[in-house]
Length: 208
Image (cartoon, rainbow, N blue to C red):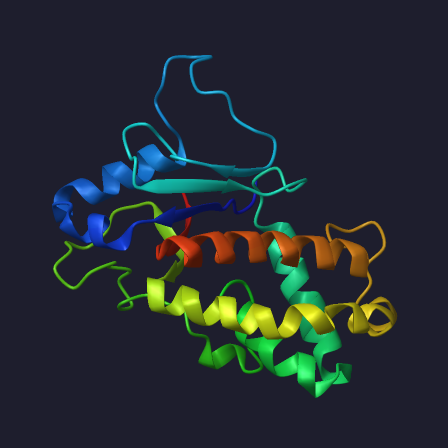
């Protein structure tokens, strides 16, 4: 089946005030609300606020045309990895910062920053060792603000990457076949980051 991802925006202060033993259950509920069938219709794309009526301090983002899979995000990161060496430095630096904070492994994969408090995946130092869901992405509110700033610098220059991306990183028939698909996915991540930053919330990317 492959790796999936569910992206949540969370009021970090309220999450921290939640008893540590209850956080895992709340995250699962926000990922997949346990409502009666038909009572909580899912949109095909965009934000759901709240992610669940039982977790009112959260939102869930539904990416377009990804079916919940992590594969498009991986291939977008791979595309940037192939194209970035040929990109305008004025774009490369902020887009490096934006994507490394979300889906890209960085110029040195052995030096990857996973964004966790520690290798065991605790959200807060007082948490017990987590049993799930697995954290693919953890960004606290100050980090989200930094990501929004990176995007603000990268966005006006992104179109200038079109020819370079299509020449160096296109994968016809793949999840991210060309620059248009790359651009569309990045702009969805920008929606995720900008709304979370506007609320002063943190971000989680989770998988079961």
